[in-house]
Image 1 (tube, rainbow, N blue to C red):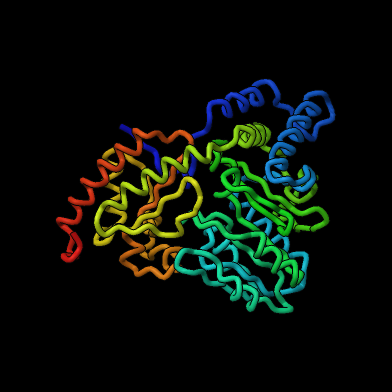
Image 2: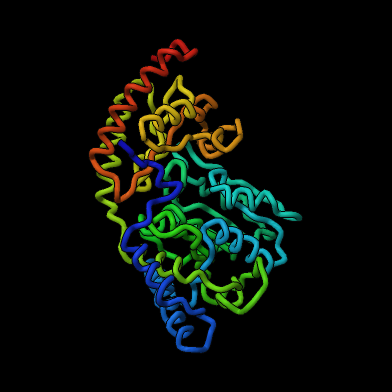
Length: 373
């Protein structure tokens, strides 16, 4: 049996999405910048897709720029906004996705402050406001965290930024279509297609009307001169179709609750992050077990999950997100993230729990940590 529970990494493309993309690839293949009828039809599809994406969170079509995905959108927002101000201070959180975390680390000539979070992962708002100075240009916060599923109050954070006249960027890649999003107090916001059953290699950046963002690359006049290059029309149409289809949030949440309840029956397990979280996210620490060993053995049973540490990416360092929550190294190293989707079934959950219990018991029998059973 094959069970895919790594939907926080990427999702299976919906067949209806693929069908829409095929139409564009085969029949509507014009360049949206061309002036002939093929180009005009492509332009119509592009703008229709832009409106579909914008409508999902009440934005205007002119506030959406299509990109290659969440990483580009985050880079474009942060570096693009900073290029339009002389201020040299940036604030972000200790639980950001690498596309924000590493972008901020790469900034030359800027001071970067990292606001802390509590034990559930919520940003400390008092600390955030105290960090803001007259030289602060930008605050960047992840909306729905990719590892522990905590959902930040972007309305409150946005009001703080607005009060101090600071740009506010939001990484909404994981939360888009799963959580209502209000961009009233947001400057820029990034989203991605492949997290919601659309194709890989396409995303978007919301840029509040009237805000100027500098380009990362140079070329033609596509995407309002902000993101030049011929648009990935098949991908964009597929992205819009995925948005249009909506997420069955309550269905996913019900299965997530069942999975969480059953896993926590296993001794010496702990749910990481808050109870109220992204509908598809479960992050559990299994004390006395290495997460990578658990992942590999689950994989042998056909179950795909991800670890709560960065070991699978050639690093022995534990997840910076889990460490920011105040966890010990052994807790972080023993963490597994299970992420569900609309394609997850009750049978998937039952099979996963059954195999997981057997694997945990086996690994603990051979664990050097003798007090954990």
